[in-house]
Length: 237
Length: 151
Image (cartoon, rainbow over all chains, first blue to last red):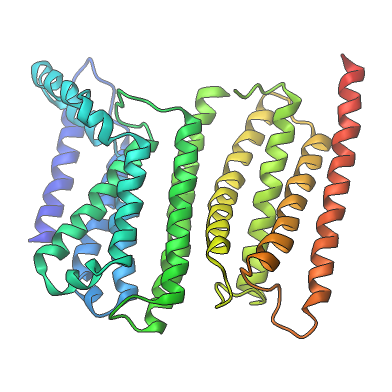
């Protein structure tokens, strides 16, 4: 089921990309974006496949978290899905979509300061309250937490990288500051988990997971920062 | 905003790169290869954790951003190595001194090495930092005077 829906998503994206590229008034959709989309969906699929083992193994739980909350959002944002959707929609519908994107509420929810709080604040709540234990008792809580991790990661990434249309833009400086604060919160949380563990997780397991969180996070962050700086370079140099 | 023919950009790119470079060497050499530093030890204060997290994130960002600034300077033929290197030494030295005195000693983040005579390591660490700051400042002042002379 998961494999099927992943395949469908990839096929749908590819089909829309190829079909819109045939339209004379639109440019050819860049081929690298098909790759980003496919890799992003595969990351989500991987997370979906191994997350069951995450209930007993904290390191696996962290791999799921890295795939779902950081790597998949970054790859999917690089694939510019909103731009592709707007290309494919008839003008009347596309206008409704862009009007939605311009709403006050959307503006508030996609502001970097808000997204960084939702993303990294959510993590603090997950690992510093009993939510982590509930997640392993209730299937519903587990699904909700995983959804939040992905959505918050995705919205945070769109709020600092303007690849898709972003009607309300923040300065490079503000977005850079927000990124540094968010990554710092992530690093501090990883060290706290390393030191104090989490209820229901053995000390050795927590340490291994925390190291993975810290250094794995750094790797994905480096790509995110690199893309961000590339935009800055193109804008000013 | 950044003007590529501006000597300040050379200085800031250098300072950011120096800070990032020292943090990176710290991470790669003392944490990963030699295992002298601990990822965490029980004496670490809360303020130490926050300071470490902030510097970790900032230096990671600074390393990458400064290289993009450097690429911009080179593209516009505005790269001035002597001034940039002055910035590298100053940025690196300041961070190393902060790390050596504030983070290691006051905030008890971790020690340089878990040995009897750690004081020797502390002195060597901080003296190198001071020498870097002096060297960097010297280069910056020298390029500064050339700046005034050229106008």
